[in-house]
Length: 202
Image (cartoon, rainbow, N blue to C red; front, side, top):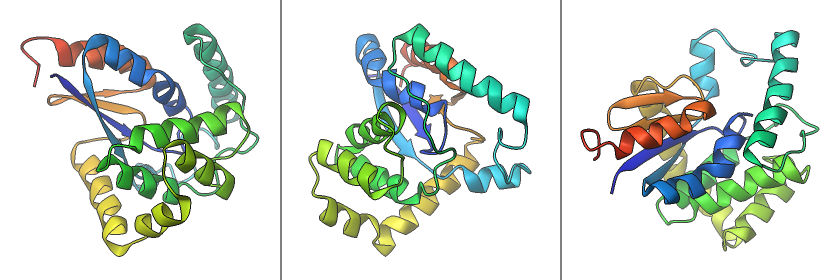
């Protein structure tokens, strides 16, 4: 089956649009998805964007909020602007998603975490968001958190972030089909089509 890697960061705004529609689109196209959480901030710092790609630029920030609203409406995705941007803490969520990627519940956890943040005002990284998303993914919060904070899992997330750097990833969401990189939610369909093409299928 053709496969797309989905590299994502919990603090990214446009990533919500991809998280909300990736499962249904990929299933319809017969493409498998590998969910790849990583930490974007170290890569942004290397690009000279210590404060992120939007906050230092008021006009760009205002455009982002309106663009998200438009795109959500276009795709029929529930949308409620979060009260907090960016979230204070995304590290724990990323560690949990990485833990779940080896056990088959990363996508469900990630979808729940983003949905709580973007539709119910339950901010990513908070205890309420994390516990709620874990419960929706069928995981015991205390057990999952303890495992996610293990030295082994912490090291694994650092390694996955390093892999993102080596693959040339500079933002979220990013999709990789074969050796081809696609950046941005507006490239999701193109990435799925690329993966499906016979000469690119894996």
